Image (cartoon, rainbow, N blue to C red; front, side, top):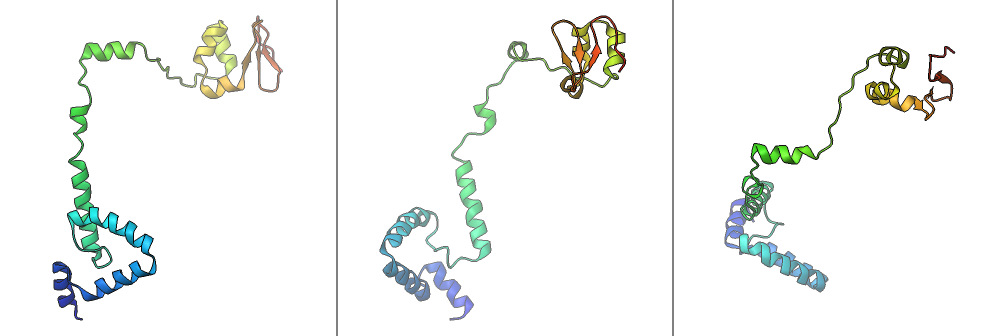
Length: 158
């Protein structure tokens, strides 16, 4: 059968080759045939042509049409999300944690000389530096090997 005749028959859903192949599939495995027929009933509401016969462009168009139909079932995000005033936004942000941005100011020895207070030094450490040093309760600063860098009063040079 030539291509144009097959296209016309496909449009009116009377392609004998497609009917024979579908019938052969249903006879081969009846349970699959029942499952496919129930899923095809839903698809047939949109388009009566089976997927095996469709060209790639028709399949792509059908997929696009289904996505459009699904998009119409949901309201746009603008309508679902609440509109917040500046006061409501400020109230919401008040309870959120405040993230400090840190920049590298120098090695820990320079920070200790500059700030003198270990709590202030800890606030100015970068993430990498804070992982590298351990601050003890008695005011000492140890590096990752356990070597004392600051003994609570002065810097210890290794």
